Amino acid sequence: MADEKDNRPPHKGLKKGLYVIPTLFTAANVAMGYLAVLSSIRGFSVSASNPELAASYFNGAGLAIGLAILFDTVDGRIARATRTATEIGVQFDSLADVLTFGIAPTALIYAWAIAPAFAEGSFGHNLGVFLLFMFLMCGAFRLARFNLQATRPVKLIEGATKVDKKAFIGLPIPPAGGLLAALVHFAPAPFSSYGPVPAHYYTYALMGLVGVLSILMVSTIRYTSMKTAGKGPQGMFLVLAIAGAAMAVWLYSQYALLAIAGLYVGHGVIWWLLRSLFSKGKTEEAETSS
Image (cartoon, rainbow, N blue to C red; front, top):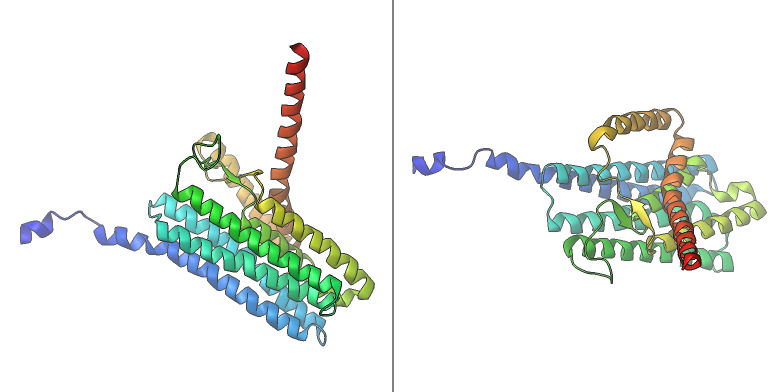
């Protein structure tokens, strides 16, 4: 019996313990979403009587969603680095994302903008509720498609025989929810504090953004996954870029977080437009030469 114990692989218990680490970060992701929902409810309850206190609650909810993006990024990288990624971990992470980047941002936007700006039952209120629901549904569909591609590396669509690990198909839900949270962090005061007419204009513009984000999530536009970033000679530049971004967030978080979220959401659209223009130009050139 003693010989059998000595022949067991070393550090087996440590290997099992590594599987817990990504789960802990995913649990922290869920906690941030939960706190963001509670802060949104608390902010709405005092938005009419105390706008300044409401702004602090809304700002806390936005920051919680932003912090959840960090946890969501770290848990995946730890799972890949330690080779502890599991199928149940993928499903748990997606369920966490539905809460933190689907339900929490929609609750925050409703409490921060739509409900204070429009009376319940009005056209603006109903339109806002519908668009927020579409945002949640598109985000859930985006996660379901991602899970299917991750767990079934087969020919899912015509012409695509493998999953491109360098890019996401469609806007991921974390940056979509993160952009909405960054807007709240940039101007956390409830929309009712701007007056009825400006509040209506601002809310309709926000609804347009929610609609665009919903379409981008279910589109086929490619977004960089950053999974291969840092490999090779570009690693030093990545470290410097992260350090610079962290310093900017620390000093000017309202502007830096909004800029980072906006750049990520916009870069996929810009690349798609450039690819479309170049491919169209090559096609016309080929037709002319023939």
